[in-house]
Length: 458
Ligand SMILES: [Zn+2]
Image (cartoon, rainbow, N blue to C red; front, side, top):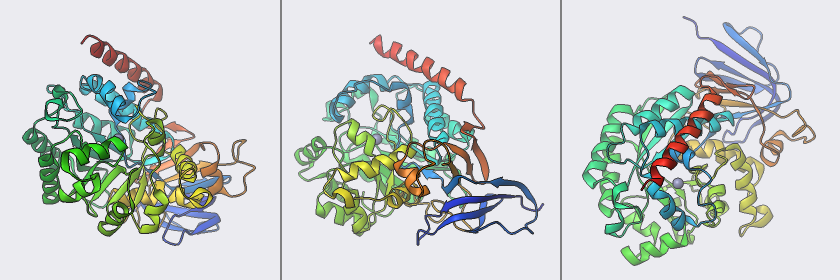
């Protein structure tokens, strides 16, 4: 059967390719699940099997947004401990999180995914690390929610094995054993990881953080990931307190500790990386270790400002992350483009810190890089997978801004007229096509209330 084509034309295009090629008015031709051509002006008239021709007048087409750090389950614990720093916030919330079950994890994943997809995310990730005993198949439930929403997905199978009695932060009943966590992670890889070019589901190995996992879990987790050929993810250098914790327990800062346990490398990406000195940044650049920059969460928890301009100048791959919605209640990635730009201007570099094109690159190509998928997604180029977004920029919110990339990044959150994932429409005119947004809103409210009720009984 001949491949079906979708033609989008008359829109501005920011390809985010290596040369930042842009077209004031251009076309994108999608053939099956791939981008066939991108260029200026109208698409050729003689294309065969065009099933849909979209007039993109008033729109900007960009690669789909790639989220590189999230905790979906937190969708049902939003708006709690709102005035705490990271460690106090964690201590306040761990007992509630430790009560989640499969139904809650599924509903929360639906909420997190729906919110991001509606705002132009085409590749999502979930770092899930709370697996209470007897809670059911949480990983399977999360993956099912991603498939139903229609987005591309990486599940970072997390774990914690350093409970309070071992000097860690989480309560003992919220952690797994070392062997249990490794075996369950390996089983998740075997069951769900797809290594193919157009994979919709991938798995990464993701012990939670230095203060909630043992040194053995970090070491053996890295060995497991490399034996299986999957990526590694964790939290790193998020707060001053974490740095103190590492110095007291291990006699070195977080970056040196990660290096000593096999956790720097081009197959690793780390969330936050706020408290990095020059030699930490040089170590990330030398090893091509990636960073998931989460500006809103870092502000919400008063963690600080990551040195993103210095990282980019040194050649560190950097993507953007929503982070869990218990520390970023909005749960949207397109607003993080703006927040990344603004927050980095409050850091050491002031007005030269980041520009609109760099912010768009962080949210697209940079994200694809840190997820290990830059060959397949993250820019609009022939041969790549057809993950793209058509942003509506001709209404009150944006119409008076001449430059479309400036409108998208500096302006209000832009509505999504169309998003394609793997060549398939996932959002049209701001509505999700494959899941019922109103039903998800109801179920997430019910599950949030159920969780609060169970946690409140202890
Ligand atoms: Zn996180």
